[in-house]
Image (cartoon, rainbow, N blue to C red):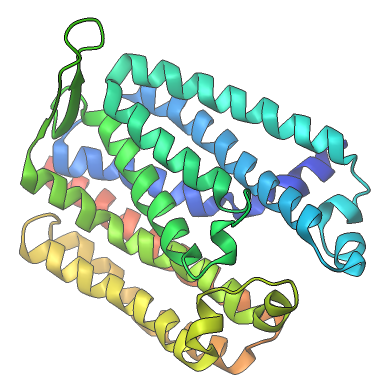
Length: 319
């Protein structure tokens, strides 16, 4: 397998969707909790990237195996287009899973049981998103699982790694003793982490929603009954816009309750461009290019989100 074929198999260009929860998680750890563990954070980034590539490879592998159309296999799926050996692809997936698991095990040993638990949940969802007899991606739950797994899961794990010694949320487990366990933490800090994750949850869910809005007819032919199938394309378009608009409401809520500081309002400068993207998306559906507006909205909003947190840090330092 050539390197270019590997990059296509794992769709390296789409990894920006997991990059933003990571970056914003680091910045939020600094701005809200006031600390970061750079070594553990770097190791987590490597494991996260490998696992993200693994789930994408599983997605393409399962789509190839489950495709009802030979034309799709040979002209649209990367395995057929690049003439990849299916057995080699399966061994590659297993190898990447093992590496990601080893990294996750090391980080859990360093920081505590709760990271292992969160990682296992995200791993389960990531693998069975397209694998198994009833893949999550073929159900009307794909947007929920993809949004929360990446937007909340990655973000929460990054925050946990950087704050485990402060214990805003922490799991104690006595395996060698009586088997007792205790989940402890601070409710308001936990709420802050959840609220801060929602803009990423919504914008990442919108990527899956845009994909399903574009591919509605093709998905039905391939027996994929997604959320758009049940809502209808018009209601799906309204949900697509509603999710990204809700991000601005979350920013205001977070500012009011003290999760953010005033520089976070820079996110609101993106609103006119986001509105234009939503209008263009509606006009172009179901053309293939319509999908790109979900990526533009995700990158635009989350870039301004990260910039707002960075400016908040600078504001704190100069106070």
